[in-house]
Image (tube, rainbow, N blue to C red; front, side, top):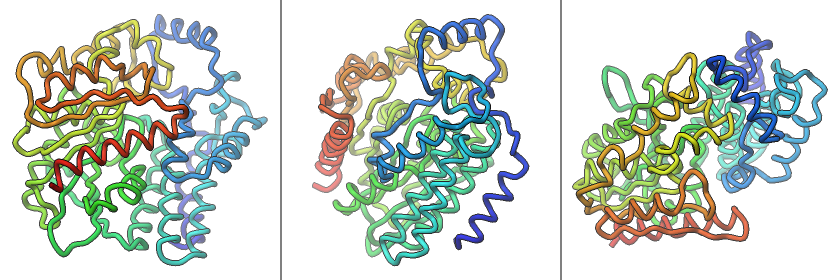
Length: 415
């Protein structure tokens, strides 16, 4: 995409939304819940509405200095905010607004991509796509600026796919009279490759996962198939239900008809809520899966404890309400409703084991995915293993987790 076309695209996309409702104000809560949230905001003392994933974004390819520069522009903005104490709630599409600043950085990467050749050009374009995706983070339904940012992320990803030496195929898999859009990443198309189905959480897009393929799976000759969770990205047509793995199951069942992958050698990786879906799928379709890795997944603990859920930052509560398709939210009923998402409450982690070897891990002290959750998963998997990753820095923790994950999958898929 030329810089000119991209600039025009962004101008036409965002022009109608100059005064779009700001993200933190989108989710409607019942009056009693509003009071609870106001008190929470005062006592929590957070400076940002969004959970800033600096480590994750830099691991995914964005220079930490660029991340800090964007955050500094947002923090220093003189424009009015929805909530003065939350720096990233600048209203209107202009300087200081979250979507505006990240989109601007995406355009810078797009411009750089146009000046480079080969894999360097592709990497810059994948970075542009990631910036556009972060511009829409946490991707709430009805967030017009985020929806436009996602359009930019998708088109930059498609552009990057044309520039890279690897093969990226967009697949459309029919399901309930609609289509699940997935992306298949291959190192070659000469013969069917082992494949790993990868899913991220409820607040990130499948296009955020490029570095996992480039730096980890591609080196082992393993294909990567990315699928969004229900209710986000390409799968917004479906609300999230307790059957978290329904779309991934439909994709799994379609693999035999995809010529570039070996459907006898299928692994799964799920991050955050994607991990819940992948663990669930390992129990529902054990004969079709060779190995599974879940990273930082909510399995039982936080889902079955309304009190713990209420302690979550507002962004997470908004994300959950958005994924469930709720219009006016009562926090108390939302937190008790989520009990149905616990794999223990569903009866999956209570009686029979799965023969799929599952590696369940999270970083030490993770409130969403405590060690007890991972031990529970390991207990019901024949060769399961729970792993607590203690790292001095989260970046090391990410690298360590991924090295373990890839080794786990490689042992099962390639031997």
